[in-house]
Length: 127
Ligand SMILES: [Zn+2]
Image (cartoon, rainbow, N blue to C red; front, top):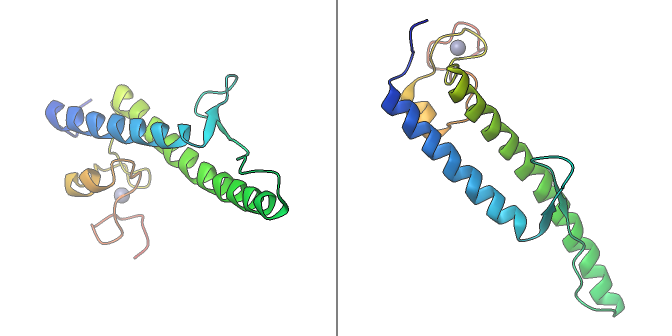
């Protein structure tokens, strides 16, 4: 099988992905605890501002924000992990629709991209 990308480009992408992963994990840890039973799963903590009624109300809304944020960040983490697995498997950067290599410019901006951009000649992505 021919490599679609050079070793150095793949190494750059791996670094990029690992950095993003670290950032996400650090951010998640500021308001969530890692689930010991499930990797890449975090549980948002319920914040404690105080016992007054308005404080309780702020706690609930902060908790809801954290849950939403946690969900979004877990999804990003999941995509990063998947991209890292593809790097290991030698499948990184191949469009899931047309199986052609995704452009390097696009991958530098979106290392977790799984499809060509619609305007980059992908036969299978609708314009
Ligand atoms: Zn494609």
